[in-house]
Image (cartoon, rainbow, N blue to C red; front, top):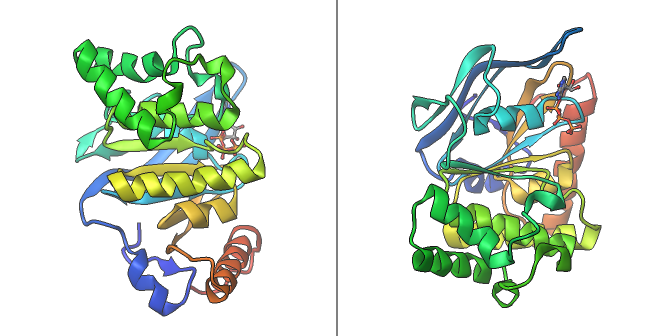
Length: 277
Ligand SMILES: Nc1ncnc2c1ncn2[C@@H]1O[C@H](COP(=O)(O)OP(=O)(O)OP(=O)(O)O)[C@@H](O)[C@H]1O
């Protein structure tokens, strides 16, 4: 992808908005993805390229059908490209692995027969081969990070949607993946909880500096969560633009700046007459 993408904000803000590190972690190189059914072939993405750097909060943003989820599944290793390749640390992605963990939108991603602690600890024992005590310790550490240490013995059905998503995030982070993949993780939450979860995610990121690849169709969410935002157009999904974002504060100037960013992205996504960057 272009090394110097446009900034949605003013020139001063741009310094904040470059990739966080220079370590190229995930590369999507001329990737096309398809679904084949008995009746037809659906091309979900066409010739897409971009790079995600270590500690990036990289957002895929676009309207329904632009292939965001498909792309995330391909990076997770569940779908193989029909053209191009995806690499992680320079090695071709050939299937799923514990180095890429996905958090989905659905609240039912936690086995209901396991407690919160067991939900977080179990994959650590299986995939990371930690002892029971080590897994418990690490699970409790990440449950504490998401504010749920006191719910360790609760079962998922007793938790709110936001709490379930926090458990899913703790479970993913506890695995310490190379990339955390999130597919509209807050889309099914009410607006207030969604906003709080976005802030909590940013706080977690500030503590842990994990690499995040986040899918959303909300422009506001993309600007809040991401430091880099890839805009996609649909049918088939293609890269429309890559933009930098930057952390914004609650002061008036920042809010105006934010609103301008939202409008600019809206224009880039939906108007055929694109303004120059
Ligand atoms: N299992 C499937 N079989 C056939 N076609 C599919 C399948 N899943 C997705 N598609 C098609 O692939 C294209 C991309 O879908 P995808 O779900 O990746 O888009 P998206 O940007 O994530 O959309 P949304 O925001 O609505 O989830 C769409 O045209 C969709 O109809």
